[in-house]
Image (cartoon, rainbow, N blue to C red; front, top):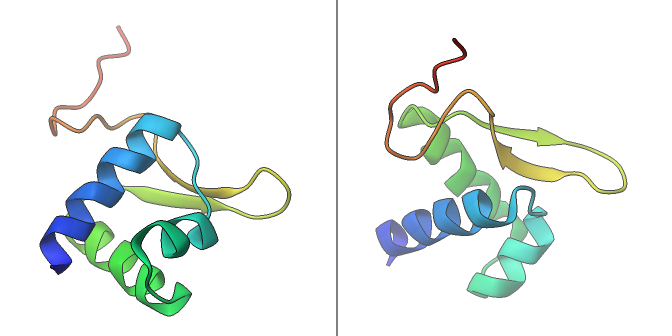
Length: 75
């Protein structure tokens, strides 16, 4: 189910810090294109998923956001 996959993706990304699209595609046994679409849907839902390229790159949730939805105070 797509919703289950999206939630699982969020948990994996938040737990690991940075995860490649290839790792996610292999884990969920879907195409890389499906992962791209899923990441887009997560972003549309208001969760700031960013990506970095190159060695050590991948998808990550921006530091200023936590899964509960409350901004992290920097005071």
